[in-house]
Image (cartoon, rainbow, N blue to C red; front, side):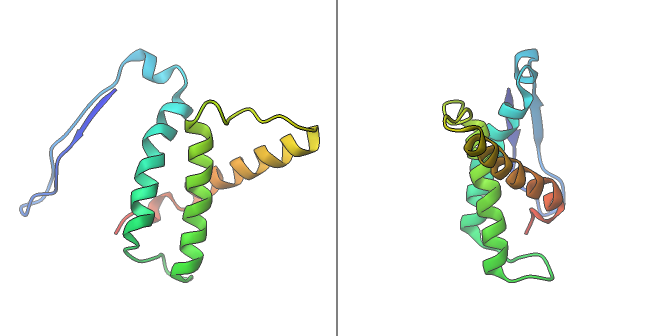
Length: 111
């Protein structure tokens, strides 16, 4: 996969060129997490505001949960925990919670 996203121009629009290969889709959740993880980290760092109905602190906590989940999915070594079945279920519930927040707040990831 190769993505070129140029800066926004004063007259509107931006250069966007994305090349996707078949192997990029083999484990698409991993591919998307590899891309989303650093983007979410940078977005969190910028702190350019928060969606209505909450505080910046609450928004940062939501972003932190999304970031943690994306990191787990992106890092293939951390994706399969060991431990009791209860611990493993708790781990995956936490991962899924962050991913669900990503879906829920997807349209709020802008500034």
